[in-house]
Amino acid sequence: MTSNSPQPSPIVRPGDKRYPALSRGFNQRWIAEPEYVRLVRSPEEARDALAEAVRQPPKDPARTRITVRSGGHCYENFVCGADVRVILDMSPMCGMYYDQGMDAYCVESGAGNWHAYSHLYPMSGRALPGGSCYSVGLGGHITGGGYGLLSRQFGLTVDYLYAVEVAVVKPDRTTELVVARRDDGDPDRRALWWAHTGGGGGNFGVITRFWFRDLPEPPSMVLLTGLAWDWKDVAKDDFVHLLTAFGTYFRDHQDPSTAAGKLFGILVLNHVCNGQIGLFAQVDVDDPGGPAAMKEFLERVDGGIGATATAMRTSMGERPTVAHMQIPRVMPWLTATQTLDSSGEDQCGKYKSAYIRKPFDPTQIDAMWSFLGKERFTSYANKQSVIQIDSYGGAINRPPRDTAARQRDSIMKMQYQVYWTKNDPAESEYLSWIRETYRATFAATGGVPMVGGGVTDGCYINYPDVDLGDPQWNRSNQPWSTLYYKDAYPSLQRVKKRWDPLDVFRNAQSIRPA
Image (tube, rainbow, N blue to C red; front, side, top):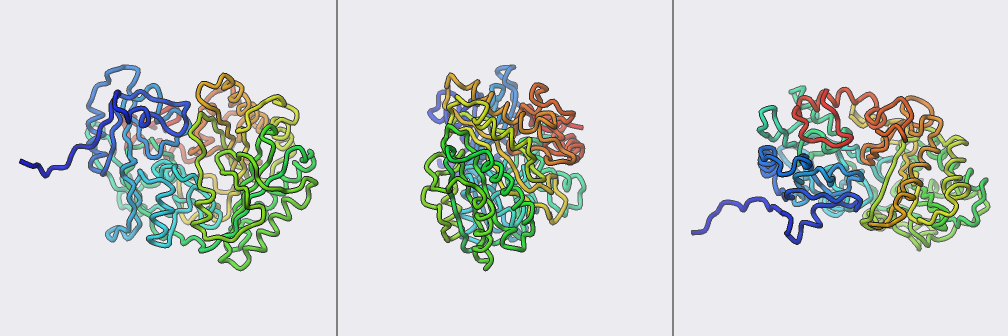
């Protein structure tokens, strides 16, 4: 007799050939040894798999955490850590479609950025204004706020979030699926929706689906460029001009209704051993002012330095080497997105972040110049050591509604990155470089980009950094919770207490119940 009942969701245990790949993520520093990895294919499977995991006693008392993976891009050991007992892998849930009942586009949490570009856009002509690394999972990306090259023009992904579906654990250890809407009549469910507009992933439950309303239509065509300067030709005055001009341009062009306010730039400050500094820029050319905005931007940044701009010849952090873009090229938006769509190699890595509200001050520029190898770390030899500075603001700073993503008056966002291969004996040196460089940049505020006035405004939860909780590296009076969430943290704690009262979903920087 043939049964019509569905097959149970796949479980991958030690000894299965899939296990080594599914028990790690993008950052090869963190490799878990869970009892099993469960592949989830539907919201109901997520609920039932969570219920089963919660009921099971741990075989090893040192491994007790249940974690959730969408794309595997968590930078710290929050998903793939030594204390993880079960991983719920959402990657089979990668659909996206228009939901007539919700009057919204539904995006399943296992989908990645590339699914949103290659499926949602061709189907609907609309897009999430999210990230440019194709394999980043939307389950984590969206909940941290989510930004990308369209964000100055259209805002953050969470600015369009209408509803979220979450499998949660109740006080009696049973589970349920909850749909929380922006306009929910129940204040607890409405607060659960709000918590997913910047509260970060892995805090409240297993996210299964998102719904978005009024998603923007990206431009048909954009102008894209990628150029570089050879470090050997860059004098200190050139470096000062480059960082100052980049910051003042985005300070002065914050109106997303103008072409210049839509332009997105990425300045890649590689360590001198890399050989080059890189610059990417993209602007909407459906807007007739797009070419003029690009021309003004490049003249502002490149026009005041003695070094001659040239083609990229080397790695640019997670960005691809765009060797034939020194002269800006017009191309379809989707083609340009694919051109820049890279996650880099899966290596070991360490990351740090900062929101920047004003152009860099002289002490910050001096610190970056020094620690990029001009005065400190001069014999350092890791070419994949980067300070990346992205443009920010525009529509991000004019949110349509209240969200948990609180940094809404910055003009730049920084990401410090360093990469190495597993078992590299110089790992401690690479960690010293990124930690000391970051601390020196923000020395005036305790080694971190403090919230509350001045140039900085905290850190990005999607680039988690456990050093923010270490007094050796954070000598300010602000804990990691303030640096990530600002004044939203107490409200997030109340949501945590209501929807995850047993603290099932926890890590070194998870939201603590009120």
